[in-house]
Length: 220
Image (cartoon, rainbow, N blue to C red; front, top):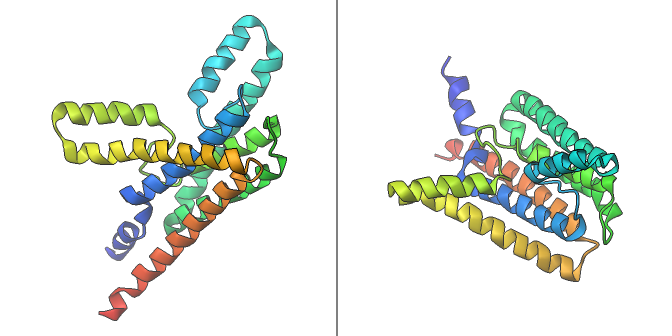
């Protein structure tokens, strides 16, 4: 009766700090692309989209409010479905959901332009909804404000060991956004394809790591 519990514990490398930081890098890269190519619609930050939605509703500007509402609902539907799916995938949760993110970004990529069209931003938002559910124990990899709040609490309490991963998360986001902006300045039409391939590499690496761990006991 104890074997299933042991399997569950050993089958979740996605909960490691290193893996979470790699997921944060995906969000940082994507966020850079959206800030450069989508001024009104953001696929990563639903907080900003919600505030803009309220502003446009107050102004009676339904032409701008409806796309934002569509984007928010798409993100909610995606993250809800991904949580439901992930709960049924067990140890396959991380690689399968990463492959889904890869697929959605790859679908969005051909529409790359100076200004991302609504359909493209929705596809990216769907991908970000999935990204936030890859780790069942993680409240969200795109919430940097929350990360800084937690970092402040840990620093205030003098718990620098717990503060380090949070500081690293912010630094990884900063570095990823910098790389995203740099790549976009040279290859603006292929930035999303690069991010999709990065997700694919993370999925493949996760599977290889799992396989190596599965063979490890038999080698002793």
